[in-house]
Image (cartoon, rainbow, N blue to C red; front, side):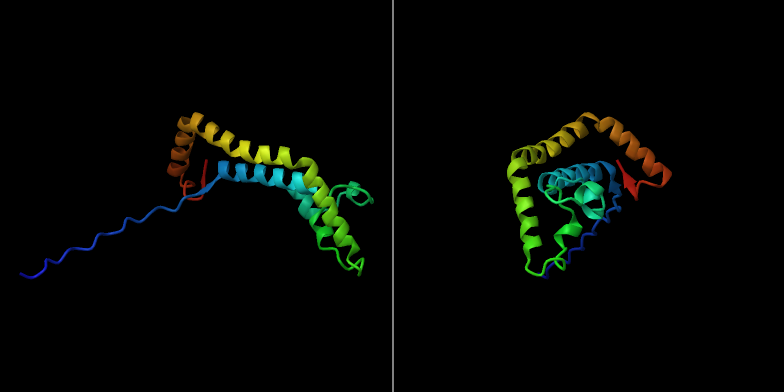
Length: 137
């Protein structure tokens, strides 16, 4: 007997999911913990790096600009000093940073489960208004 031809199963297409506001908030908080632990700056100050309190010598704050500043000292002493400051910051704050890195996702998971009805209603309203494919809660 000849084999029966089976019809191919159709794949169900998924809707595009929007950007999660709660996910962005969680990521921003984790990024803040990382930059505070290693560089003693919030993420914006780390990237921009033009605050007046960072310009003095002996400061423990390190910006992105200072990390890539190698043209001032051709011997590489500035890079070495910067890495020492980062190492000192990390040694003094590693425990609180690690604790916050563990607690923030747990807190968001717990908060999302508590607020699930409100989140669902809000996402439904966003879908009805046509914004749901771009943004969700």
